[in-house]
Structures are given as C-alpha cells and as structure tokens.
Length: 253
Picture: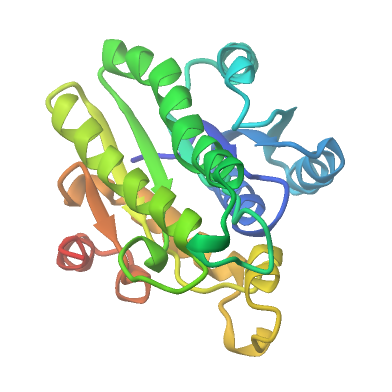
C-alpha cells in the first residue's frame, strides 16, 4: 500500500502506539486523522506531526459511544477525503488492578466490549462501504497475545481482542474481491501507559518502544498485498525488513 497521500484514520492516537503510528504514517506521506477522547493529547501529537512537515487533524471522540461514530466518519472524510486506511488501535483494559472474571462487573465487561469490539465494528461499517465502492482500502486491527492466551485477570480485554481478531477474518471473507483488505497485528509488549496500568511491576527497559513497533507496523502496511486479507501477524521482528517473502512467512501466525 502506497502511503503517499493516503487518507488515514487512527483511533487511540493520543498516546502510546496510536500516537507513534500517527507520526510514522505522516512521515510516510499519509494525511492522518487522529482520534481519542483527550483533545489535549491529540492537539499535542498533531502539533508534533505538523512540526515535522506532516498533515494531522485531531478529532476528539469516544469510540465506545455509538452516537459518535457516524459524525466522526463524516468529519474525517471532510478533512482528508474518503478514508483509505483505518487503524483500530483504541482500547481499554477495564478496571485496574485487573480483576478475575468472578469479580468483574457486567457493566465493566460491557464497556470493554463497546470500546474494543463494538466501536471498531461500527466504525468499519461506517467506512468500509465507501472503500468497497472505490475498490481499495485497508482496515488494520491492533490485537494482543491476550487474544490467543488465557491470562488470569485479563478476561474482559482478552475476550474483546479474540472477538476482534475473528471479526476481521469475517469482514475479510465477506468483502473478498472488493479491494478492501483486513489485517490484524499483535504488536507485543510495549512501554506504554496501558501496559503500566495492567502490570505496574514490569521493567520498562524490557519492553519495546512504541516508536520502533510503529515503524514495523507501517512496513507491514506498505507490504500488505503480500498476505491474504484477514491475516493476523504476531512476529513483527521478522517482517521489520519489509520483504514480501518475510511478510508472507509471518502470515500463518
């Protein structure tokens, strides 16, 4: 996927991996719409991107609010044109410290699913039709190893990410042949506020830098045609070089 001039929308772009992805996409020539709940965080990241010569537009919104989705989709298209790249990065852990399932309130589970699963579904639904009509587009889901491994305390988050992964595969199957592609990526453990909230005793020096991970993810996006739509990648170091062969090898994860 050629990112020069691409209209991209990144959720959860106020900090962490989302902010790093927005910066890296802009460096590669994408016109980026940044979405998060905090306008302060968004304005800061957008200003940093503009200072480097990139194009960035902050749009504060809560992905878990169903009434925000269609206004968000319309505003984004008004700013940068029809969206070519949609990055579902926004997510929530739910309450911390992370509770066991028996201690998880139904309302907390519902909120996690609204942000991590239902919100991305709604936003994809709002944008994928236009992509299909134009015969091109990529929807990128940021996943987690919690989607495939059962960790005590991670129940709500894990369930949401596992469902998100499968949702991407179903979208891919249903939109096969339209030019709209779907890709899931497990970025691994990173030095972010979310990781610190979930695992406050973790050593930050042992965690990946979101900026480095963002570069690898963007390289995957640039080579996305090398893997089937609906692929889930979980071996980013192997694809850091960006060759199509390596990206295809990682596609079985």
